[in-house]
Structures are given as C-alpha cells and as structure tokens.
Amino acid sequence: MQFDVVTLFPELFAPFLSTGVTRRAFESGQVNVRLHNPRDFAQGNYRRVDDRPFGGGPGMVMMVEPLSQCLSSISCERPDDVPVVLFSPVGKSLDHAMVTRWAASRGAVLVCGRYEGIDQRFIDTHVTEQISLGDFVLSGGEIAAMALLDAVARLQPGVLGDADSHAQDSFNPALDGLLDCPHYTRPEIWQGRAVPDVLLSGHHVNIERWRRNQRLLLTQRLRPELIELARNAGYLDTTDEAVLSSYNCGLPDPP
Ligand SMILES: C[S@@+](CC[C@H](N)C(=O)[O-])C[C@H]1O[C@@H](n2cnc3c(N)ncnc32)[C@H](O)[C@@H]1O
Image (tube, rainbow, N blue to C red; front, side, top):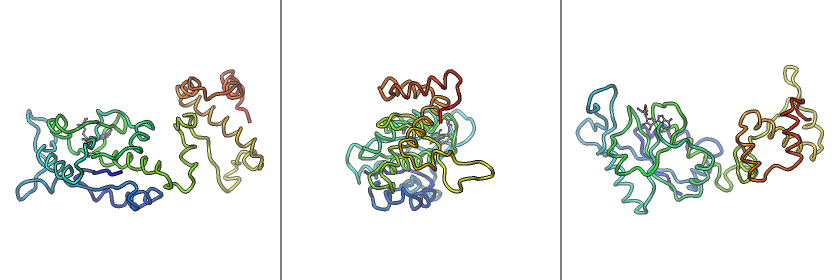
C-alpha cells in the first residue's frame, strides 16, 4: 500500500511518521508514504507555486502547473490508475467506513491544499475524490492527510500491540458500531473519585456486562442514531434492549 502525499510542507510529516505505534507501519513500509513537493516542479528563480485569484479577492491560489507536473512525476513512478484524493472542507467527511476502505486499498495520491485552495482546473482534471476532516477550515490539508494515514496505519495487521485493540474501538461495524466504554487505570482512587468496583472484582462475566452496558448507555446518550443502526443490524439482544429501556424510563444506570 502506497500513499504519495503532495504537500508544500513535507517537513510536517517527519515527526508524525516516526512517532507512536503507527511508526511500525510506516517504517516497515507496510503503509509506504512518499512525500512530494510541488515547489520542486515550479518554474523560475522563485519557484512560485501560488498566485493571486482571477476576479480579485483575498489570499492566494495554488497554481495548476506545478501540481500537475508533480502528479505526472508520481504517475511515472506508479503507472497504476491510482486515485487522487484532495483534502478539502467541501469533501465528504472522513469516517470509519472510509478509513476501512482505504485501509484495504492499494493507496492513493493525497493532495494537501494551502492558501485559499487550489486552481479548480487541477480538481476538474485529476482529482477523483475529496475528503474533509469536518465542517471547519484548516490552514492546510496536511493535518487531514495525517489523520487518514494514522487511521489507516492502525488498522494494519500487527501494528497495534494487541490485535483486539482496534476491534473494540468505537464505530467498528464488525463488532456492533457502538461507542467504546470508559477506561480506568491506577490509582484506584484519585482525588476522591474511585474506579467502579466491578472493574476491581476480577469477575470477568460481570466486567464484560458492565462494559457492554456502558457502551450501550453512552451511545444512547451521545449518538442515538448508532443504537438504531446496531438494532437494525441485529447486534442488540433482549438484555441489551432491557438495559436501554431502563435508561429510557429514567432509571439509574445499571451496575
Ligand atoms: C484555508 S483552506 C481553504 C479553504 C477554502 N477557501 C474554503 O473556504 O473552502 C486551505 C486548505 O486546507 C485544507 N483544508 C481546510 N479545511 C479542511 C477540512 N475541513 N478538511 C480537509 N482539508 C481542509 C484544504 O486542502 C484547503 O485547500
């Protein structure tokens, strides 16, 4: 799997690619990331990559030619018909389903915009998909690219120390799509707040039930639409439904 990242700021990626659990995926080449700077394909002494917008207005626009040349050079190295992703606030919001799809893919070219954005003619001729990190505006696409690469890397076999880690994470439709339960570690009491007794009991069946209840109740409270999806997919049994109805009746959370 190879991701070719087009960015005016490749130096931003160095610490990201060499830090944390996902480092293993990047350093082993399991998720191969190559960085390409459109400035290397710009003309003139100043290697200009941006210019003022036609029609006036604030800011600068990334020029089509350096981006296009940069993409041609990537295409020479990988002649496969690779998707070209542009990170943009107007794109489809990144979610677990998209990450899972990219995690099982051959990779892509990831284009990071800057300034007011990039010349529309590059988007019209080359971009196959636009991805957003959410309904807000970043200064550049690099953080969005890192978000996608991180999420893809942690889904690769052997990258997380415990293979169950990501299986139990929030939003996993292979499990049930619910939110994750709360987690605690030492000390048992911190500033008068104790860890729930059940987690110290050593009773694995009760612990599992407590975690399941927490996941159900948290999801019901914060993301009720995910409960509906889990129900429709047949992931909720009668015990789960009883837990949820006790919550709906305003009864205290079950232990
Ligand atoms: C300052 S933004 C341009 C915003 C653009 N003028 C607009 O209002 O839609 C510069 C670059 O940051 C990236 N970017 C900004 N917000 C983003 C978001 N929510 N998701 C993904 N990329 C984003 C894009 O690559 C964009 O070209």
